[in-house]
Image 1: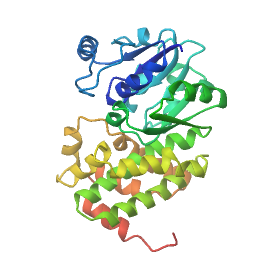
Image 2: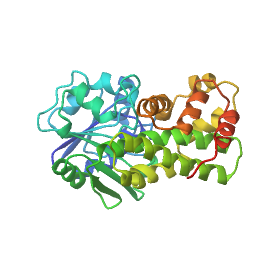
Image 3: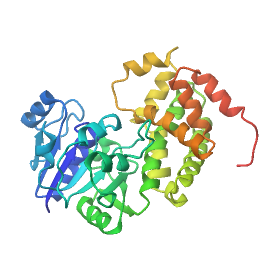
Length: 328
């Protein structure tokens, strides 16, 4: 197998590099922070983002993204959405390389999905760009615990990546619905913040179950209006990722929702939050997309209101419960 390049040295990128490297002749991992890149290369462990996990011997670590992607047959992008466009702009990428976006989010202002941002920033045709999503905590993936994900794109590239990424404990499904797979992975983070608020307010399992269920209906409405296939929302990148992120203790977005209930000001929580929580950026984009497409987005609207300090978590949950009665 050829060379795999992984752009993004956080927990997710490091976990994917470690798990997938054995399937390739060689692999490289790009880490933005120069000191962390040097430390990781020397110790063979990303102590900041994935402590206790040794990097596969095939992986070379670099601070230079151009060196990382040189001669790569597959480039796996796991960069936080806030920095995705900046990192990819100007990179020289082989005309035969496939790019796989494992970043879950939507870009503010442009309202673009991550594969669209990748294509524009890197100057690559959408035919060569795929999306990877599904219920997957980085620490569990790195520990080789059973995980199932989905890769979406055009048929031939998808089959190539599916075969290249599959391992006995890492099952890869295929899909042609790039829009649905990306939207499921992005919007579930917003619902998870709401679920975390319900947990933080000690509202019980019923409330969380209601948020998950109505959250699925909400993201299905928006995804459908954007051209996604409804059945995708019932799959790994929709329901699967939604359940994991709303209920799993390791979910950063859920943890943020809990933290919001323990402070009088959302700005203080957000300023002190050093972890990547894509739901914060995605909430406002989801609301704007809903307005543009005429799609009702009550959960995203209330979560966004809390994030913008226009409502408290208590007021947001109350507003959701007191909405006008309607058919399910």
